[in-house]
Amino acid sequence: MTAVAEDVTYTGVISEMNETGDTKIRWDKDNPDEVAAARAAFDALKAKKFRSYAMNGKDRVIIHDFDPDAEQIVMAPQTVGG
Amino acid sequence: MAITLLDYTSAATGTMGYATFTLTGMTTEMTTTTGTTVITSYADTTTGQLWYTAGDKWIQAPAYPVAHPYVARPRRAAPDPDAAARQARFAAELRERDRARSLAAATARATARALLEDWLTPAQRATLDRGHIDVTGSAGGRYRIRTGGGQAGNVDLLDARGRVLLSYCAHPGARVPHEDGFLAQLLHLETDEPGFVAVANIDRDYRPRLLAAA
Image 1 (cartoon, rainbow over the protein chains, first blue to last red):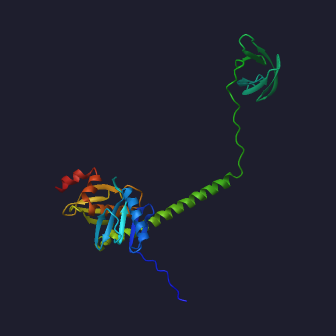
Image 2: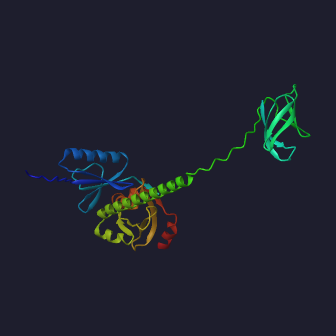
Image 3: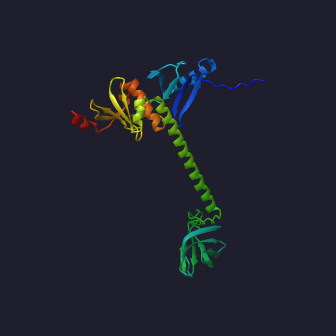
C-alpha cells in the first residue's frame, strides 16, 4: 500500500483587512472551484467599496477585477478623511 | 374602609408618622407607627370630608372617597448573603473578558504587522523599526507615514529637503489594526495620490509651516 501525503497547494491569496488583522482567502488557479470562491469573495468586498491591490513582482498596483494569476491581493476598506 | 394618613402627629408622643385607621363608626381603632390608640371620627355627609380626633386635636382626613396619594414607605431589601460571591464572580468575568480582548488585539496587530512587512520594499522595511515609512505618491509627492502611533493625522507631506509641509489624516473607514491602516495609506498614495489627498483632512497647523518653509 502506498501512502499519499495530502498536499494542499495554492497559487494566490487575498488578504482582507479587518479587525482581526486580516482574513486569508486562498486559491489554486488550476482549481476552478477555488478560483470561483475567491472571485466571489473579491466581488463581495468590492461591493462594500474595498480597495484592491495586487503585488506583481516588486510592483504594487491597484486592480479593479479579480485576477486569478495574481499571487497576492490586499483588500483594504475604503479610505475616509479622519 | 381603610385610610392611610401622612403627617400624623401622635398625641401621646408628639412624634410624626403615618397611620392607617379603619372606620367602624364613631369610634375607630387606629394603628400608628407608634402603637395603637382609639380615636373618634366624624364624617361630614354633605362634603364627604372626614375628621377625626387624636388626643385633643381634630385632624382633617383626605376627602372621602378619594384614595389618599401617600403609600407605605418602601422596605429595605433584606441583605443578600450571596452578593459578595456574585460580585467576585462578576469581577473575575470582567478580568477574563479584558484579558481575552487584549490577547485578540495583540494577535490582530501581529497579523497586520506581518502583512505590512510582506508588502514593503526592503528600504521601507528598514525604516519601519525607526517609526516611519517613506512613500512616493503616484503623482510624485513625497510622503512619510509615521508608524509610531495611530492612523490619524500621521501622513506627512515632505518638501524636497525632507521637511514636513503639512499632515494628512485619512485611513481605512473600518476598524483595523494600525499596521493595516499604514499599509492601506501606503497603497492608496502609491496608486492614487490625488484620490488620497482629495479625501484626506489637513492638519490645521500646516499653514505656518508652509510659510516657514517658503
